[in-house]
Picture 1 (tube, rainbow, N blue to C red):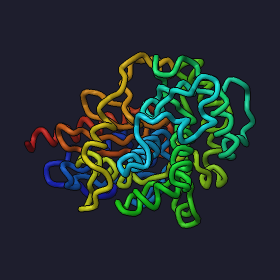
Picture 2: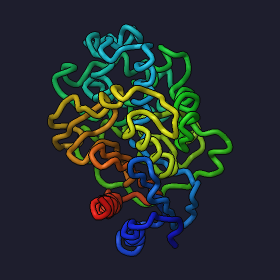
Picture 3: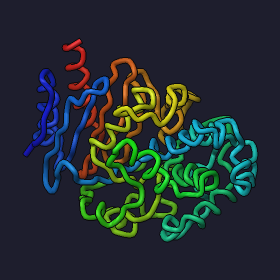
Picture 4: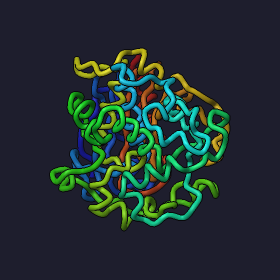
Length: 354
């Protein structure tokens, strides 16, 4: 059932991956990891899963959306302390005029949900969604709190990219990041990528909070397997939640980040830009997640490193202290226990070999 390889000393990682299937309800997944740029695990298994199968990874996509903006910032096309409205004038409406790029990328802009019910088609209409976000009043005074902009983070970051660069976020990501770094991580699938995509399966858990429900289900569709397994959703750009990737693609992204912005000799940003991404902008109670979170620029930050997890169990993260970069992608909607088991096994191997 389990295929792939691990480096000598990382046999416990393979055993942990096998445990996910034997004990934790996994039916199809991939896991990949690097330590200080060296590949140490490349595993896959389960129904319909191959090494290059593309999996819908939900909020793991947010790191790609944020990094696209950071690439532009690194090039001087915008600055993190610019007001968003400088580049996107309509966004300054309804009390959002002072929101900065930094505040937007760290979930402090307050545009966490739309108050009025919206039809499902809105999410597939980029211009209409961005117009709705620009007109929406913030749910708190921007800069005074934070909550994950769960469904719309990618539109906020992506519209900045489009206003500054002219390309959509999916096109910019493909041309300027995924291409140069050879990342099998995509926003807005084309025919060849559609052919490699596996369907999600299983059931979603209950929303953590009323705000979570409003943020994820208005407009409805993001937690409906009939929608997210459909071609229209896969072809669309919804860069907060609809990235499709292999574990190796996500792990390579974090390998480039933990190395300070360089991968396979290709530098995309300066080390200072990556450091800003995971420095941590605010530690506070997140009312959507109902827990205390430190948000950086498109990633959470804690004592183990930085990264993003997706609904259903997918994960991408890196630890600057140990140099590890890892990713778990799954087609079986469930908890994050599976990625936690693999993370623990990976860290144990790193510690034993150090």
